[in-house]
Structure formats: C-alpha cells, structure tokens
Image (tube, rainbow, N blue to C red; front, side, top):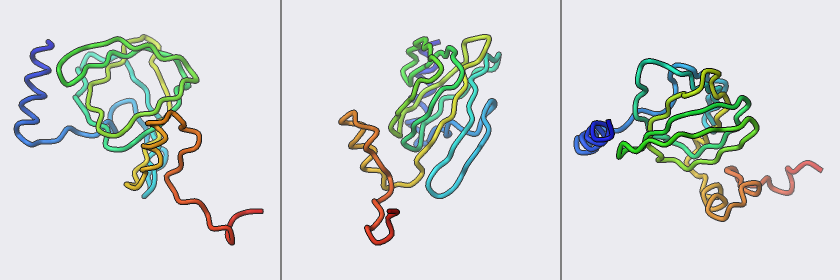
Length: 148
C-alpha cells in the first residue's frame, strides 16, 4: 500500500497536476467563505471508500470540539495514527499534502479556519516563533479609527 500511494503521488507530481484542496468533501459544511477566510465544520467519519490525497492551499488554524482518531498518510505512503482530544487547537501552514482517514467509531469533529488572504506573513513569522496569539493577518487599525 505504501508503494502504491508513493507511486500515485510521484506520478501526479511528474504530470504537473495539483492535488485537490481538502474541502469540500463528505463530512464538511462551509460556514463562512469570503475574501479573507474560509471556515469549515469538519468531521472525519470512518468510511469504506479511501479518501483522496489533498493539499492545504492556505494557512489554517482550528479547534476540535469532539475527540477522535485519524490515520494520516503522507505523500511517501507512510501512515501514522493520530488521536486528537476535544479542545485542541491546531496550526498548519499551507502546502501540507496528505490523506486523512477517520479511524474512530465516534468521529473526530472540529472547526477549520483558512486564511485565504495571501498576505499573512505575520502568521507565518508567528508560527516560526511559536507566538500565535500575537499574529494578525490584517494591518492594525489607524489610531484615528481605533475604538477608544
């Protein structure tokens, strides 16, 4: 199975094709979609059909509100089981490519927020420093328009 996944990924890259985005897919509902963000309600159900390899197109954060398990498959075919607790916050930079399969009977659920605005260098720098709480994707308000 590892070899097959690696061959498929290598073939797709050699053909110059791109992987699809992670959403929409079964188990997801779009909550907000505008020029700055996409917000998705996401569930990872256990399914018989193998999910597709996908690439995250945007920097993202999210919070899980129901615990559960997933199997993550990387582009080289390596699989790793992941358990996620409710309340966990996730940060991920764009470009991650993998397969995520639900692995628990009671599926993992959460909300995923994708920063679609291309100028999020502050978020990337904050991610590198580990200081996410100070990161903002929008410029600060001018003092004349700031709330007092």
